[in-house]
Image (cartoon, rainbow, N blue to C red; front, side):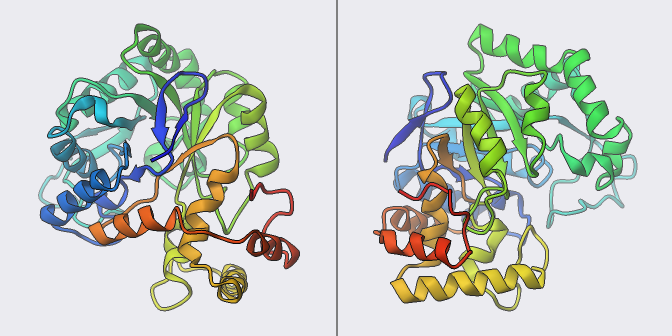
Length: 344
């Protein structure tokens, strides 16, 4: 499988990576056997980059990812996880339930972007993964949810307070020191909204951003500002939520989700337009969703989530499925894609 470099680090990742959000059971529960089979299918398909996070299933995804990767030669894959949350025993263990994860592990959390918090988050992840090396660390969810979507975020002063912790509280310096010592090869941020990358670059020097939602077949909001800045500074992008959390994989229908919610009418209308163009050109929409982000020169990898081995196998095949240039041209002509989005 083709590989691309992360920023100017010398670290290379496979174009098709594996996103661990599904292993944390964001949508539905899966068995340990299913999780294991899904990860082994990714390895068998040639996937060599795995991304996870303590947030996914309240540490469940890291445990599952580590269980399989510990059985592999450490030089055969690149591993990233995330920092910014610390997990601990809840005050009332018998009544505690995870808010957005189906049967997540029974741990509560707080946000902590200080040097001590970053160090503990990193070391806790090493323990959960069961290895002594992580290649890349993303600062996780330092975004709009801290300003109102998550009560824990309000406790540290929202986005502004978190950035201040990361800067003045030594969190970013801790990450930079890990990179300087060679423990970590690349550091960056995971984002879900536009407007944050320029703000981060005023204070920090990341190697990459993990961008989930603002650059997909459905949305190219990050194109003109965020990705342009990355191109100018030699910063890489890893693209998550390739299927916009599901809708470009499943299509419109019962249970379709966009941004982990019921899709608004405007999204449904746009998706139907994309489906029509796909049908006209004999293109599978999933193939288009997988391939589109990789046309952009700053994108090093995509990390679609998967909850079944068959989905991984299908993704590995679809990423190489031929798509005619006329297909992309028609999407742009119909106003379904930004006209300046790279497509070849």
